[in-house]
Image 1 (tube, rainbow, N blue to C red):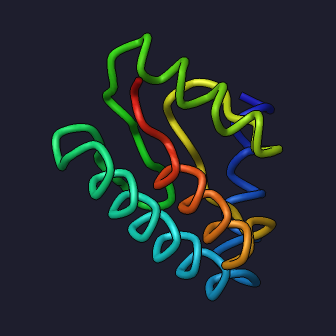
Image 2: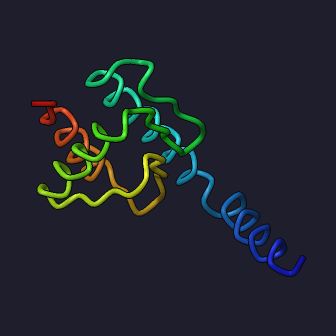
Length: 104
């Protein structure tokens, strides 16, 4: 249970001292979800709080991840989490990368 307390403490700290950052993360996630939906359709993405879940075929997601990697953007699995260290400029760069992707 000690580990649960560590996680809870981080959440409490964020709620007390970084509420504006949390709100901005949620806005960024919604903007990113809209960008993904514009490129892949509404059924390819869902957003909850500061997380964006992509539901693309594995080969499409792999090709997207490779395309983004060539632009200097590394992504892992298709659940992207926005946080306070991701700026509006970072988000714009990611959106441009997604918009520049096409399946050949």
